[in-house]
Image (cartoon, rainbow, N blue to C red):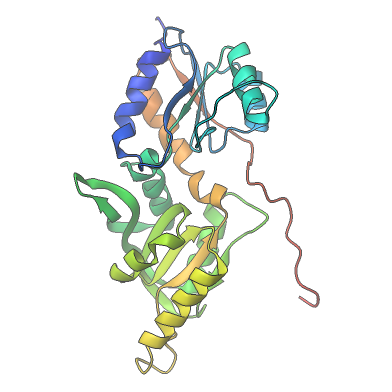
Length: 288
């Protein structure tokens, strides 16, 4: 059995995650590598950082596929005198190419959003913000939970199924309130609060929530729900996780879907075992 070329693998990746579905500001696709070289091993990771490069080289990967771009903005040099240039040089010297699937993977069926939605048991779902040219693809997912649970139970489940990080899981809202509908967005999601409210989600699971947007959403929700019930503090409630943790579940889907496109035994895929969340510790406030 002959191995596919890098060009063959890129063709499959671009079918799974079409570059045209990436956001206009994004930088996706093949970053480095010779399209004519054979590909036997593919490592998938969230971040193209030094620890992941170490893993790719140690395993003998021919291709590293990451979710986050190495170069999001144009550069004039990839010299190894910079930490990003060093990534390119180390990979190429080891015979390993680099490919990025970012917001095009966020939007795809069995992409970042679907993987996160599956973990929390979201059914009857649809994109939170659908593409105008493809209703199946879009940012985030919204739908119904398999059964109503308390906000506490929902957050505890999230903590149990996502990778462990120093941040853990932050919650805004009444922990005893019942939630039956949810919206999820992998990665930074506080720019989508209006869409979440429009979807009438009881709880919103995402990452990187900042103080002011989160505070204003909760204040608005409480204000607009005033008088509804004695205990209602307004929805959506918020569940905030580490950026890395929210996107990591997609890697298993990508690994399986990529390998399935080739004759068995020709391409081996592996999900990186390196935790690339940048935060290393969290200290509780005094007295807690």
